[in-house]
Image (cartoon, helix red, strand yellow):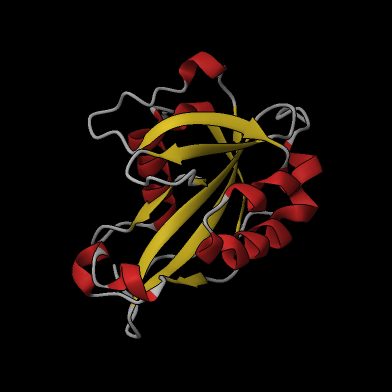
Amino acid sequence: MVWRTMGKSKTANDGYRRGVGIMLLNQDGLVFVAQRIDFKSDAWQMPQGGIDAGEDPLQTALRELEEETGIPPRLTALVAESPTWLRYDLPEDLRGRLWGGRYRGQEQKWFLMRFLGRDEDVRLDTAHPEFSAWRWVPPDRVIDLIVPFKRDLYAQVLDTFRPHLALATSDPAS
């Protein structure tokens, strides 16, 4: 079953920037993570981004995935969508620097997708690169790689999609 909802606006009314996140699984059930190009620390994350005005969250997810990884929509299959919006708060020292200081954090709709391509289809040399490296990791390893302020969010994402993780690696024709 796939849950879908429409995004009402780019931002929520309570100081959270509206966005999406993508948990992308390969055929072995491993999760795509990439290293941020703009962080000095060893910061890894799953693809994510902000919703443009008038854009559906799924459209945003497909656009962001291609913009950040070079993976076109035709090389993905939607498995599930988080039934609720998930939030994280930025640390105080980042609030004034990111997004012009307008938001306290992000409120995201998450999508679980199956990657139908090959590793060679991943291209970080996009028009506006956001990542310097990428890799596939077991789902339970993802939280260890993420910046501390997003760990609770990623735990919620894993809990939300855990029932689908084994199913997502099965044959798409089944």
